[in-house]
Image (cartoon, rainbow, N blue to C red; front, side, top):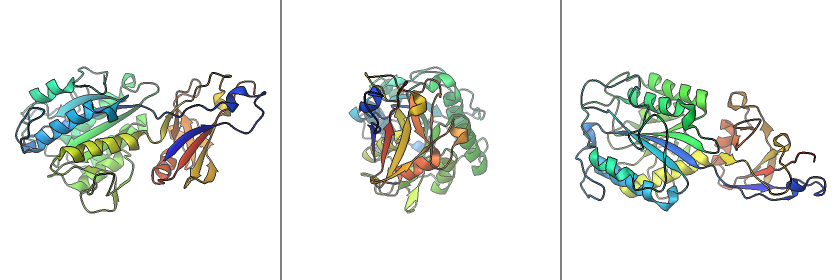
Length: 343
């Protein structure tokens, strides 16, 4: 899938900025990662260790991704669930709606960065149960804070778990509803990553609530990305946590999360009039379809798009149905035509 800003066919003297091509840039990503540290994740280790456990694989994979060049421009915050090896699981999300790194109720660490290694090394799997509800409400609380949805960037949540919920509310309908309500209120997707021990039909239900996009069972270097043999799915399988597969899943999540959100173009010639910007989707890269601008996510139509802010836009977003169509079209092209004030 490619993205380009094209000048509309009009006289350049009347509309100078429309005759200027602006380089397309995908929106950088802010991710809040909620990592399961229940006892079933296995033996503790430090970054760099080869201990055979799901926890060790997770630690190494996250550290590798956080420090990789493929994460450049993105940012992350990290939290764990359960927080304490006790029966106090904070099912309402209190305590989970802030990060352990960089720490606090707001803020992310710019990537690539090695600063997460200290926290990963000092944290061990020790929870007796898996309070998934608390972790999900923590994601909704942290990313529901408007301060953590920064202008010109795309926020997402990532839930990583190796098992079924065993504490707090364990109903799949309830858990799906938490993520669904979060997306409806914020347009922030939640991605679900499962490891050996998780029930992938459950993960799929949650990922549907989080509005995670559909992907194939074979994606890049991942050959069993769905975990249950399905041809397509919304959740992600990393098995026992093979670091290479884990990092590949994070990279693919990164691509799918930002594939339908683009930075507002800029130009050195003329002043762009947001009301005169048009967006076209080229099916299979050849057949153009004009998309309809709507006022916001709630007003979305099947072939629609909207600004993050109608007065001073910083992002162009495709509506969910159109986004799904574009992400499922490997040859898709999306083009934006610029119009100017006074044009």
